[in-house]
Amino acid sequence: MRIGFCRPENALDKQVWSGTPYYMYRALEMQFPGDVVCIGPLSSIFRFPARMIRQASRVLTHREYHYGYSRLMNLEYVRQIRRTLMRDDFDVLFFPASSSILKELDVDIPCVYLSDATFRLMTNYYPHFSNLWEFNKRSGERAEAAAIEKAKALVYSSSWAARSAIEHYGACPERTHVIHLGANFDEVPHRNVILSRRSIQKDRFELLFVGGDWRRKGGDIALGVLARLQDRGIACTLTVAGSRPHGRVATTGVRFAGFLDKNTKAGMKALSQLYLQADVFLLPTRNEAAGIVFCEASAFGLPVVSTRTGGVESYVEDGMTGFLCQHEEGIDGYADRIERLVTNPDEHFRMSVNARDKFERELNWDVWGRRVAEVLRDVCDKNGHPD
Image (cartoon, rainbow, N blue to C red; front, side, top):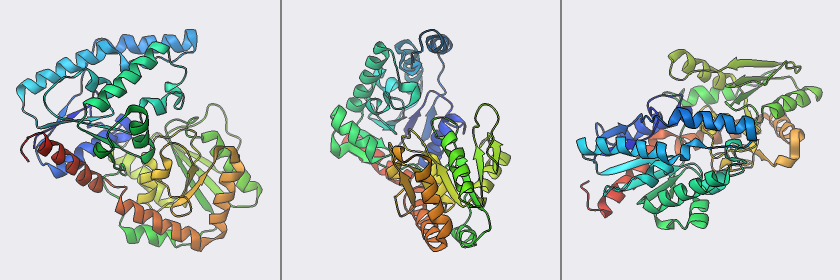
């Protein structure tokens, strides 16, 4: 099988979508050695003007313009894809989170579409999908509906997203698959190394927050949780990687590790060390489609304390691999769960084991690659392409 991997950005850059396309590509390459071809990065003369329009819209009207749905830009992407298709033969095309490109592409080659959410779910949920212009909403809805209709198979990263495809867009349940994402690390420590660290009782509890969007990921709430735990007499610290708030932070016991670039060995090693040293992964996120960081926390046997929102429940099992709070519980809800883990070392260790089990069972790229490979083969078989 010859697979075309279609993304507008450089899929091999680990800074794109937190490195997710890179690990998808590598997982498929393991299943089809030498037969997975990146069709991209794609360029467009309309990309820079579209970004300027978005910025102007934000400043002048306080409305969002999502330039990813620009038809002129996507038609130019499609022309570049067609040139690649003329030079190479493919049995299937794989489109990770590229509905607007798939909408404009008409080919006889079967296509598989992957996403972590539908446009309907993202509208007025994520900040950059909120307060959109009406024409932008229509463009997004048309792109989503067209991609779902055109694709011979659909792959979603959570049950939350798959349900929306079926209920909101009429996707066929038989060709709609839920396959969880994996941890974006080249290597993770052996299970025994992880669990031996989790069995050690420490005088100080270390919390870890990893997120590139401080506000959406609930950074201010995390600081409040730390302060509340300290008020209760619990010795704990918080390490933050990926973002930080504006201005001075009054809370004591906070360390900002900054942005850690996974394209470098130093950045990857530093982030791995943060996961290894932590005791609990805290992410009081406001909006979350899936969250690669949950897979990473599971890989390092970290119980997760997060929010019951979006697709999080597909990655964190409440009471098993961590705790999920409701938005309205506020800072005390997260602090209560963490205090429970601090004062119950047996429960903390049990959740650590469960988290690592979930990583080994489903939240890794090897499992993702095997399951997506089955989908791709099935699509090719049904469309008369060779195995």
